[in-house]
Amino acid sequence: MKKPGILVTGGTGYIGSHTTVELINAGYHVVIIDNLSNSNVAVLDGIEAITGVRPDFVEGDCTDMATLEGLFEKYTDIKGIINFAASKAVGESVQKPILYYRNNLNTLMNLLECMGRFGVDGIVFSSSCTVYGEPDVNPVTEQSPIKPATSPYGNTKQISEEIIEDVIHSGAPFKSIILRYFNPVGAHPSALIGELPNGVPQNLIPYLTQTAIGIRKELSVFGNDYPTPDGTCIRDFINVVDLAKAHVIAVERLVENKCLEPVEIFNLGTGNGVSVLELINTFEEATGVKVPHRFAPRREGDIIQVWADPRKANEVLGWKADTSLADTMSSAWKWQLALREKGIM
Ligand code: UD1
Image (cartoon, rainbow, N blue to C red; front, side, top):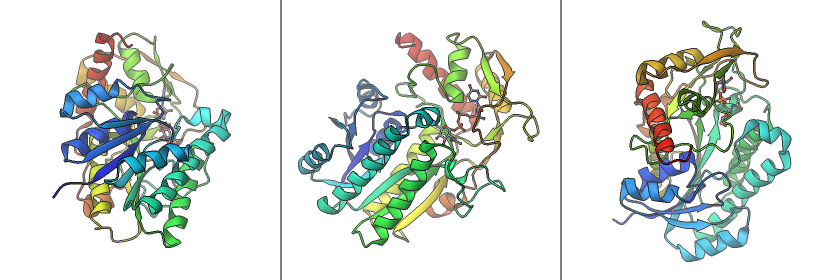
């Protein structure tokens, strides 16, 4: 049976591009909408080089209803949406809260409104472990308490989850799967797509690989006096391709009407807590490349430690993050080398 169309909002971004590859590999017709605010149209070439298929692309903004209406009128086979279109820099969100609330929330509300009108069966929403704040107990399950958000970015994730619950429980004719990501890292093993941060990276892995290649002088490890075994923060680093595959399973569950509840929530992580220092060591061992680093003061707003209990996703979705951290670090390095080869960075 022919598979339906899937709309991937933010599909030229980091997680969106990897998910598009996995959707195409699984036989779906993918339509991407992206405003290219934090990505490049050349990502489509990378997706095509990997899969042999160029996804349909609409350059536009999901906060613009007319653009979305035009898209759904044109691509009538769309039965599922995966919503990646959002601003995601924690620090920037503190400076520009209105931008974050407008962009992230209006996008979601426009999509939900279109779903009813255009007969879309389900939406996969990108949420974050940020909703758990500083957890009292690790690993966190989907039932762990939601803590007050510490940034407008984090708040948009919490509010978005609530909007989805409210809309679907009001009797909407569609369902949703909310995926709470831990820390997505790495790149496609082909090194044809990966993360493309604008300017000075804020996140650990792009800063680390840019330091390893000599673009940055040294990596600052923010805080070495935390109450953790080696004093540095602990995260659950999940391979981006593993993460992408979970989206294919989730959207399939929605369009094939296999959900057990109207809104299902899953943690997507490995289940392993890894400290910042352990991560640097794993990178150095996997690649043979040294990362100059020094300890720096704690970064404001950082969570001390958080890692996932991914058993619900393992059991219900039949999905597991099984790429080793060493392989993930190698993929991140290969991508950084490819960027230099292309003269991008
Ligand atoms: C944050 C957000 C998360 C969001 C993600 C992507 C929170 C609590 N977390 O994750 O929701 O999805 O960004 O934007 O809001 N580090 C260094 N040196 C660096 C950079 C980072 O030591 O140069 C450390 C940090 O202190 C942290 C760890 O590395 O302990 C991971 O940091 P980062 O990659 O920025 O991700 P999070 O802050 O965990």
